[in-house]
Image (tube, rainbow, N blue to C red; front, side, top):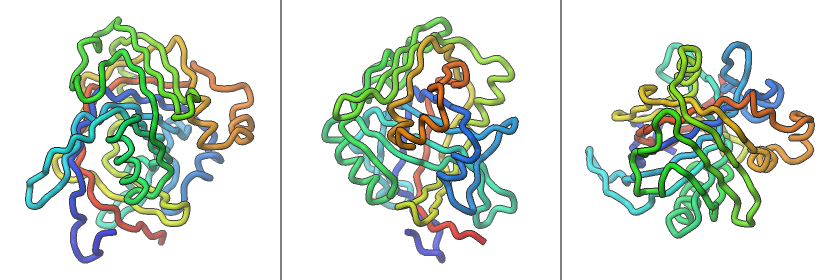
Amino acid sequence: MSSPFLPPRPNVYEIHSRALYLTIPVPLSLCMSLTAPPCSPDLHNGEAFISICIDDLHSLQSYLFGNIYAPTNMGGYMTKLNLLVTSPVPSQTSPVHGYQILSLDFEKGVAGFVKRLGALVTQKVPSYGGVTYRSTLGKAGRTRTADNMAAGSDLNVSMSSSSGTSLVNVKGKLRPLNSKEATFASFVVSRPHKFLHQNKTTMAWSMWGDGWSSPTEGIMAVDLTACDVTGILEREFGSENFRKFFPEGMDVSKVKAILQPEYTLVDLHNTTLKSK
């Protein structure tokens, strides 16, 4: 944790490419059980949401000093399972919009193994390694922008656990956002505040440091033809709770899917967030 008397120290600079967001309305009671004060679910048109973000961590640079960062060879596909939240934070007069990381997944290989260990130490939320990703958007770390992000392009993205269990399997076709979808896309991606319920006991947070960017320009809608996220949600909630809250399984028509070309962030060290 950072000293309360000094501004939080930068940790890493990250460039994330081809970010697929699968945003799902979930019962408010379920969302409330996943967070803790002072955080609360951030509502849009009266609904609370969980958002699965699958992207290529194209570049990860470690902070040295001043404005100097050192490149690492730690790229690769990853997934954040986020609860969309709002919370009061120090130095802000109004509650901020943010995302609470419920769990993290990293691509199989040495880089993913190292990043998982780092996440367990620094983020202190469930983190998983050995994940296999398959994507029509290009290989991890080799394709900063994808040529097949044009309207009409097919999209096929899947992830499976180290044991081979399917976690996410998505198929669809890209098209431009309409105005209503653009408003919702901004609601999903314009969240430069991270929250963590560390070890299920302590709420911590950080804001993205100077230099962050999460533009809505270029975001495409994904018309889903297939979407199975049962695996990742059952792992988070448990099979019994999943069946309780989704008795008929996941309704594909309720999943809002968008594809963002790129976002960048400067991750600052986490600080404890106290409830008033």
